[in-house]
Length: 268
Image 1 (cartoon, rainbow, N blue to C red):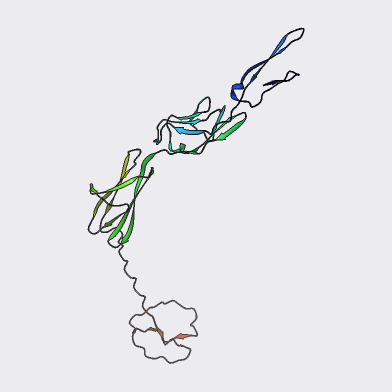
Image 2: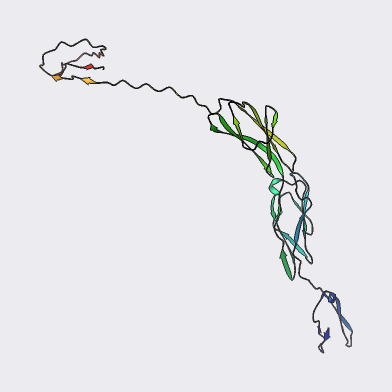
């Protein structure tokens, strides 16, 4: 520290030990003292985020904490509705965390001379299994594939039962010979974190995937029209009696000039 003739004080190579209260005494006819407090800030350390539970389940109580050195202010990238922020902003608390709270979080630590950001911290909320479903797909005339699915975080594991009995070492999807292995198939979905299970069943029999062919529509008869003669004065010929006669008689006010002399249906 160096004091200049004008009363100023110069401090070189400032360090944290120089922080404190400084008093300047002025000697004159009336003595007076001037006080100053010098605050020294160090660069903030890179912040980190930790969770009170590493693998939270839906409805668990969870706290996220942002930790840094020399920080005077903490700002979070997101604070979901329903979460509680501490008075110093260092923690976010979830009394009952839910699946919508999952995702990436980060925090920024700052003081008047520096700031730094944490790495992204991902929180995963386990739930399920829910909405278990079996999709049936036809493979051949005698075989079907049963594929089980469920809403679950982390993804569920699956095993199968046939008529209530476990089927061991069978994958998902499960291939079934519907002719030989008719019965009720049950998918059991299990979540390794929540420890919950859920099931769905379907019945497989020999009629699954079969269709009954419709009867072929009969072909319309082939009609041939022969000997259609238009003549005014042609003599009438003796005609063989037709197999079927279609008649449509109506009174005519004036006889027509055209005579239909030959109209019959030829059959092979």
